[in-house]
Structures are given as C-alpha cells and as structure tokens.
Length: 176
Image (cartoon, rainbow, N blue to C red; front, side, top):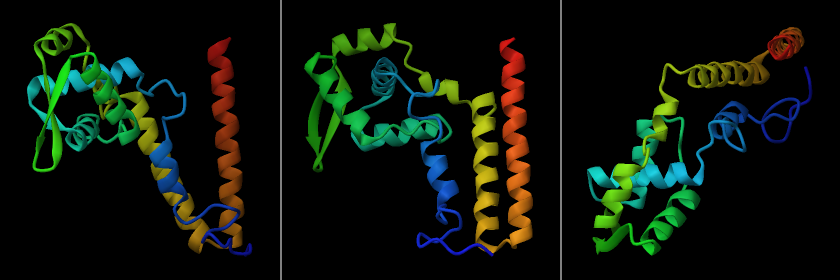
C-alpha cells in the first residue's frame, strides 16, 4: 500500500478529490463558461418573470441548468450592480434583503436579449453527459484510493492511462 497522504488520500489526492473536481469542471476558460453578457441576459430574463434577491438568482440559474451552471456571488452581485447603474433594474429592501426588479428600460433589454444560456446545459447535452461520467469516474477513483489494494490501484492507473491516450488519439483523428 502507498503511504497515506496527510489530506486523507493517496498519491496527493484528498478524499474529496472527485467532489472538488466536479465543482470546478467546465470553468476556467472552458467553452461552457458563461460570458458576462450571458450572465446579464440571464439575470434580465429571470427578473422579467419575477422580482428576486441575489441568492434567489444564483439558485434559480443553478436549478435551470440542472446544477451545471452555478454562478457565484462574485459574478451575480457585480452584474446586479452594473445593471442597476445602467438603469435596467432597481432595488428595494425587503426583510433585510435587496430585491431587484426590471425598470422599463430593463424590460425592453430583456425582450431583446437571449437570456437563456442555461439551456446550453440541458441534462441530455453531450457536455453534461461527459461531466456526469467524469464525476462518476472520480467518485470511483476516490473510493478506490481509500480502500483499494495496491494491485487494484496499479490496475486502475493502467486503465486510466490507456483511456487518456485513447482520448488524445481520438482528438488527433478528428483534427485531421
């Protein structure tokens, strides 16, 4: 057996490796990362349906994308501030929360915008199916690293290396 990593796993991967990977998969420049205009359009679209506070917007976008697109507070609140400065939304305080609604200009902008970027994350889309398969794989690897034998871990490394090489070969064929 390999020595246990102080973070709780083997080979430098913590017990939460699969969960951590899943949280960030698809971010950081991937083609499914939402652009600023997507976030603005999505917020306008949601506010066209009803008034919401920031956390409601975050959770609604995550729900509509099937949990794939989870914009954070660092994305939503600056967008709300920007939309408010542009005069597209206004805010009022309600029970200690800022509740946002569209202005007349905001309603016009929402009607013109493609405010449904979450549809890109349909549960049957290839990107979502790949993400799900990858998360399931990492869950299995995390389980293996916790309780697997040295022989099981070695065999898994071989399988993963073969899979990685096969994927690169497939990508090289597609480019030709």
